[in-house]
Image (cartoon, rainbow, N blue to C red; front, side):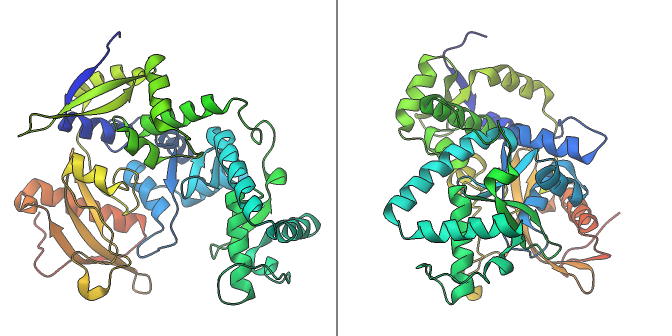
Length: 403
């Protein structure tokens, strides 16, 4: 379709973003978990990793929101055995699709050159770690911390310093996480042992790599501003985002989108990939509402400013807010209902009692007085409990179930 500019409403943006994130009811169905997982990663590109485990690790929650109950081992196999996904460092610790490995490697190589140029004393310690892995084979962090080094990194004690060095080497691409122990310890290997050519190679042209990085991030968001794209999924640094946008516009790979704003004479100018224009039109006809709880680190809401602009929802996390100053709770999960985020819950999994306890349910505008929305919320809580293998659900006293 030959269009130079689109005009849409923020509701259109919300629906298309949800569809691109596989959070509508229109995602393809597959018989096996691995196909479902790969189909999600093909479009959303990455899932953020975070160690917080109040109910479940965030990456598993992000997938559950999209495909429902799945075998966690299927995800492990795709990362560490089949290597179709990769645990690497993009803009943060992530699981990324393996097709982006050349971009990830380019970003890490540039980070490596910068760090070792400013901290040349680290070269010896990096070499020592890699030699130890080469001699002993893949090792967990605690075994590598037995290697005595005088690395000048922050932290308290030798083991902490070695762990910081391992994290830094991972960010630089010297070592890779080739597995996880049952207790979730990382298993480290030298990157050249874990990845194979051509996976390990870098794109030749950096300008083209920057454009591809921008297109990948925009494709995952659906419709977004330049700053939102650059802040979402950047496996490698984009040196000049304005120049990248200009080049993509000239090549007609992206087109501007004017977004009308109620009660305002202004319109926001965001962008969409040209290849997604037909999908946007289909979204209007094929929209199917879905309801689900979201991880606090979910791709849809991780950009708090964008979440407020599109959904009028304050998605800030209170993990690091003192308890007496929290408004919603330590680990709240937003509730997506169709194209709206209508509330959030404050859950906690009691693993000994195998009970999912919902400490609080926060309504964003009296939505849960609607019997249908309340029913969908309780159904999503029950689905989460099943995924967590909890035997029971404990709701706040004022919440009643009705058949």
